[in-house]
Length: 312
Ligand code: TXA
Ligand code: MG
Image (cartoon, rainbow, N blue to C red):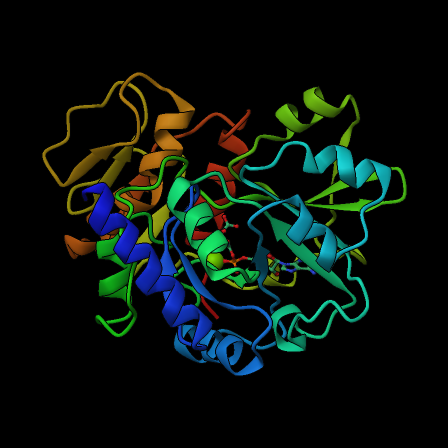
């Protein structure tokens, strides 16, 4: 896209959003399905379009720290976390009363999950719109998150306009943390590894128990479900598809390699796209090679475990 048409595309997308319409946009993690977070009707159409349960609150994307601070109360510890913005980190904070956010955007909770995305198009769109944007991953509820504009279009059968920014860099969703007094609790593993947050802040990041009082409601749902069965830590059998990591075995069926060199960043970036591609082969099952559970591997294995979970 040339700079001129890109500028026009951003203006058009912002005009849609300001008029209460939906528009999908790229972030460094995955594509988001955006709506003006201060417009209840606009936010409701996110839930309708995705088929998402109303009790599952949305992440609110901000253009800058001033916008974020107008929406939530930042403790000193929260401020130190916010120094990691822009980036793939969503922070759950107490809402400021009268902040203008639609109640449906936060599913009626007293808290709100905020982030400033690290993507030039997302930031330009947020500035041009001048409003906080509610944006879940731009996929029908329960399906794989999209990392390209084409996947968004296919997911919603062309019904949603998409600002195209090419493939997403990180490939898995943001890490979600809550601040609980002097504790930082991770509610969802994601594109910012826990160890990176710990190193930057010099504090330990606890992992929320599945049934903790503070939790990300969306984490209770079956998620990331491809059509194919997923078999983890597996070698491929005849008739299956195979998602490799590191040196690939001899296999004649459909195969993708998350990272031939065993690089977790590369693997995260390719995860959803390769699952999409292998799923599209119509194979009944996808065997997935073991992936180390360190660094970004924590988020990769989390998403794969959910994709492999039995559907209810
Ligand atoms: O990378 C990302 O985070 C992407 C891009 C588009 O920014 N967005 C994303 O949104 O993954 P979504 O809707 O797929 O996931 C949002 C998660 C859900 O698990 C939800 O329950 C949790 O955030 N969440 C939102 N607000 C919360 C709150 N106030 N307290 C706890 N969890 C919250
Ligand atoms: Mg999602």
